[in-house]
Image (cartoon, rainbow, N blue to C red; front, top):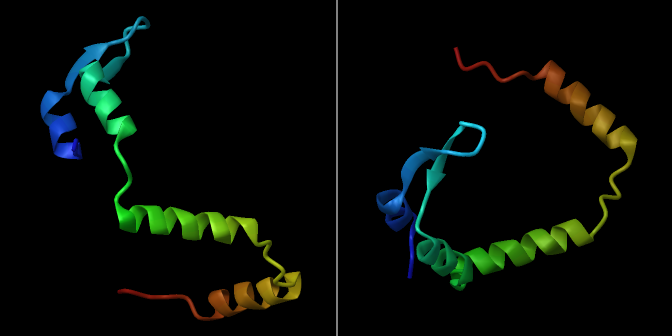
Length: 79
């Protein structure tokens, strides 16, 4: 299993055809990263996001107007 630390160790900085700096990693490491299975918790989160995106937001515009007014009246002050 490839993790982000493996990619960081293998990466090096170079330039592209336009002279811009880019990070390079070995192709076999990239292919292993792209083909590995998702961790179960990540797969569950992605499924929940897909479900959330599939259900339209039917909150009326008035509710959002009230919410915006509430946020303006109750600004968070961390000072």
